[in-house]
Image 1 (cartoon, rainbow, N blue to C red):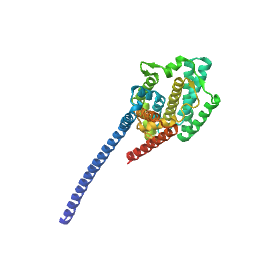
Image 2: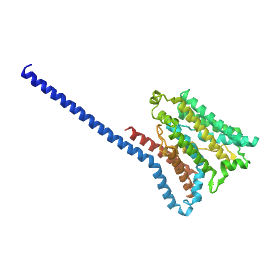
Image 3: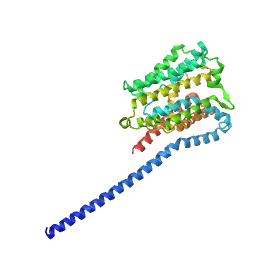
Image 4: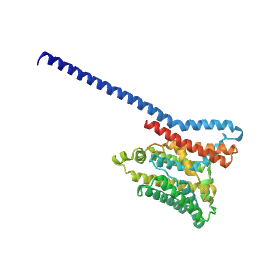
Length: 355
């Protein structure tokens, strides 16, 4: 090898070393950039988790000041808000699982009405509380199974499948008694599932607390909760990891049906009757509560405690509108704007997360 060849070889070696250094520096730089981006995204996610609580506090303070003379912030009225929102809150527990799995269930309101009608009819015929409760829950689970089959077996979009089932069930609730209400005279049933109190606390609030404890454990402390989030976050990845995503979808619809049916039982106990109009529009309130609580319409995220805060926020606003003497038409308009805002915020958060 001559001197020129040695010079060229040294230059090449130095160049390779520089390239290695450049590559290492580039890799380090990219790792730093990605690390900073992840930290930024984590901060955004943490902020979004607490947003519903901040909004709840701000709304409460606002109405407590503006409706001070109407007794908005009184203990009695606050307990009344929790009592009025109990059914929505309980359905929202299941709503967290449904949305987290990337699905949607529009049958919850009509399911509630039909379950209340069945409870009233069974009590009228047999006066057997246990039988009435079992019939309602079986019906609710059956609705969930049908919804699940339509989505997992026939491949129908959850929105369209449950929209059609919503109409079928609501029509059946109207037809079964020709739109007439069915009174419930069983005082024990009414006390346990609606009108009773334990001290100053309504049984409806106690039922809500029970279901949120169970829902929190199921969602955050069991494989089912993790599999639900995985199914909604990335279905293909969940399948490759061994999760039976179709079975998870079936289970979340069954859970939604069961809790909707129990909400119907509480409606029947509170109103001491079964009516086809129970739960009208509740499906929208449930979706808004869950989304406001931190769930994404695209799936993969959700919060049980956040859903509770979201349902209380919805109930607080409805209560304030009543105290402010707004008409039912105006209340519906406000609730509509809240639903639009909730879905818009969910989509915005999803876009930021993807970026």
